[in-house]
Length: 312
Image (cartoon, rainbow, N blue to C red; front, side, top):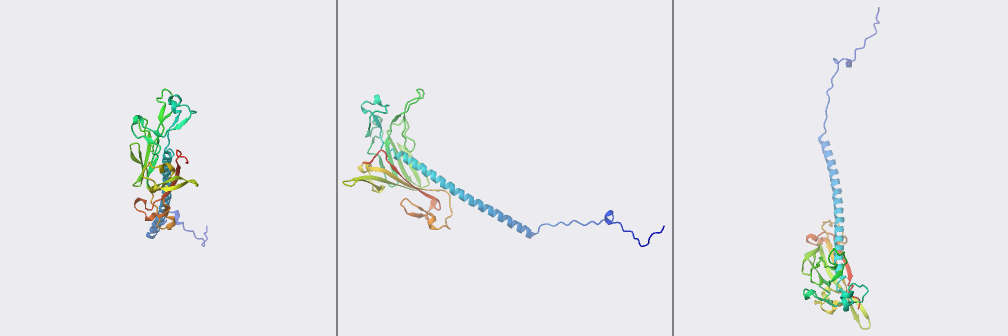
């Protein structure tokens, strides 16, 4: 058998035999220093942006919380002052004074106003209706008659009378013999304090920047009738027995509260970083000192009519 000479046998591929297989070494390549620096810079930028957003969110949240707290405290002060001023000078309505025991619980009996109330057993602080208000530029004292109200309970629950009237501190209690409910408001060291009925002064509000009192006094002039004028506390008599105090028909209270959150105001125009004081003047927040500097300030003003002192 003849084999064609022009036919050549192909050599067997190397991969068919491990004897002829070439082993290429695996090359490992890490990150270069430049790549590491680029990654580090990008990571730091992301962290910086996130931290900036967090700080902005924290500042806005703190400011909103600060304003909310100031408004709540302002409403609390107004509520306490209103509860005392609207009762100032009020007296006990005595049903049928000729026979108190017989008709003390009869709502349809004729009534009279007591003009003076003595304390029990002639002890304590007696109260004359003329002694209703007294105060200065940053102080205010109110008083009204305390008496027992008929409160009807079950026979097993104890007494059927209770002293409903309370001063700004919730006193006097039922065992007190003082028939005058007295509230003495004073402003000092950024605190609004109250005392009364032999109790020590206690703070009822903090972070108070201003507290001012003015009075609405009714005057009667011949031929022109009556008019009500706003009178500063400094122009009122120093003695509460002066008849001018009986002409007071209302009390105007103005106070300013400030917050605890420090805010950045250096880049704001002066018109937007100022607040209005009780005297109507504008004050730059950055010019303040101590804990008030660069803090939110809110002004509150309200007028309370004395219900017990009607128009003349």
